[in-house]
Image 1: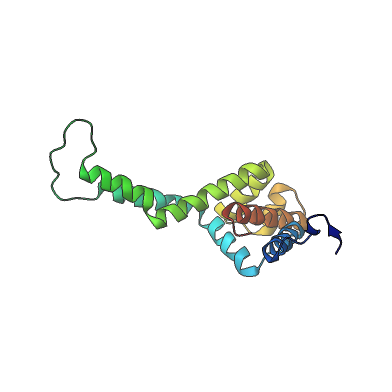
Image 2 (image 1 turned 90 degrees about the vertical axis):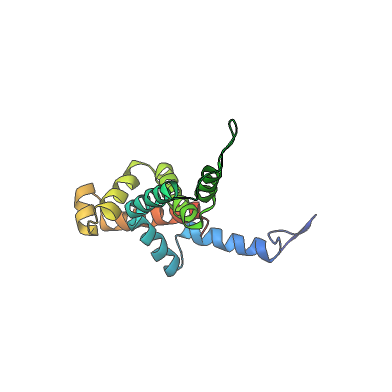
Length: 160
């Protein structure tokens, strides 16, 4: 390593080295198998996750509370405050919303071809040979695009 004016160039401590190694792995398309599978699982569950989010929100909103205390002008009553707090702090709801937003952002960043791949593979559940025919792409292009999609979602989720 060369010495620069502010220490050894290229070394920023252990954390800096780890981040550089992770960045290299992402650029090279390498990702741990378990992380890849988890992200694909979330891609396959996209529609179910949206349904679950809507169901949880509905349950929170419709939840029955004890009789309400009379409230004077413009203040939130106790039940409304509890519902708003639950909607804003429910850990499961927050996690699921974060996943859906990450997938949407990744698709926006990648473009129409990746969006079509997402639709065919993860929503319509077509197998890769059918997708290659439908999109007029090679097997190699399919797997490259799939890897790009998974990596982008992982990046949006902060897993990579």
